[in-house]
Amino acid sequence: MNIGSLFFLIVTTAYSAKVDSVNGYEWAVPTRLAVATCSQFSGVSALPLTSETVSLLERCVVDELHLPPDHADFWNNGSASEFLEWMHGIAKKGDPHTTLLLYFATHQWSDGRTKFTRGPNMKPEDLIQAINDAGHHYQRILFINDSCYAAKLENCGRFSNNILRFYSSAEEERAVDLYFDHGPYGLQHFIQKERAFLHSKMQWDPQGMTFLGLIGLKTGLLLTGKHIETVDLQSFVQKMNQFRELYNEEIRQARAQHFILVPATSNFVILKPVSSQEVR
Image (cartoon, rainbow, N blue to C red; front, side):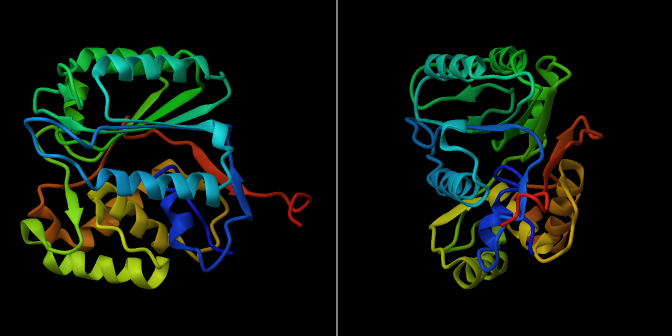
């Protein structure tokens, strides 16, 4: 039996391993998913491949790991005020025993401000406050910031103790939207190989995806087929960075270095085997 893994990082394992089944595993804790992205902008380049990554995430979480559809919320392309209203609704759905996986992707500037499809930028303090407010209603939040200069938020305010952060880039780095039909930033060999993987293992032909999504996908493949009792956040992050190092020279040219987990010692079990009484 192969193993699937988390939200969009860990959960991509499930889709990458469609040759087997992930029905032998279940969420180790009550879980909700919330995805907020902006992919269209005026006056700045779009992020067209973010939607491909979100599509994969949704299929993995709901179809492969059987998260109830009413436990997954998606928001895309609006203003900062509309995003805050959506976050207020996510908070109201909270439960003190539930883990919220919050995936966030947009243009983030080097000073921590975030850009939305329309309207003014959001100050980093306001974003942190919205996440902290939601955190009052959940056991924990794993906030996945798949944006440029993502880790800059660590210098812009204080997160509550139950907010874990996973960043696609350091505060001086840009994240990457990867097209598969050509190789920006000197990544031609890397992209060619990963596109072949998507064709052969997943029968999937997207235009591309975010760098964080692709590395998460390949990390899932590395874990596939291994008899692991549980999947935890700490081991998955370590595996993601180990895989990134396989393409160290090419990936460095894309300005993405190591993925960052804050606090560095954060951990919890995400998936566990279904008990024998439950397996049919």
